[in-house]
Amino acid sequence: MATTAATSTSLVNGGLALATLLGFQALIAMMRRRDGFGDMIDNEPRLLMAGRVMDDQAMRECRVTHDDVLAKLREANVTDFDQVLAVVLETTGDISVLHGDGPLDDQLLGGVRAG
Image 1 (cartoon, rainbow, N blue to C red):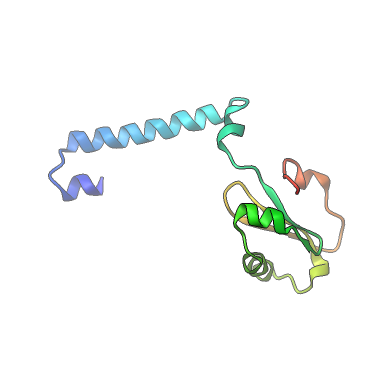
Image 2: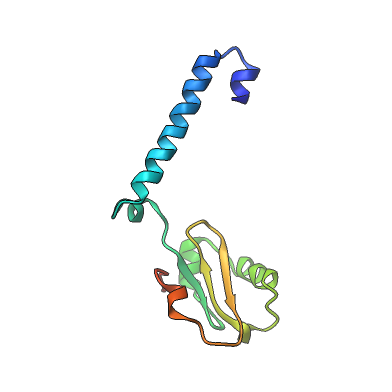
């Protein structure tokens, strides 16, 4: 819309372009709910660290460095590696740190690819 307002592009063409983009986004969101299509276009969450052990192979494949993981551990207020239960690279690209004293519920790692 900003390009339409700042250039000589007609308001009709700008509105049509915006409607097309929104239409494609809605179509893809609808198709992601169907079996198989979401698996084809969505990333799979990856286990980067289990307990104290970083998975170097998974980190290499996901292009995540040790420094990235350490920064997320600090951000999560982890003060000792013994507190870390798991570190997961989510489908959104965020890194989640699961830490605490107790055991980790298996459901929290459902769908997460290890190794």
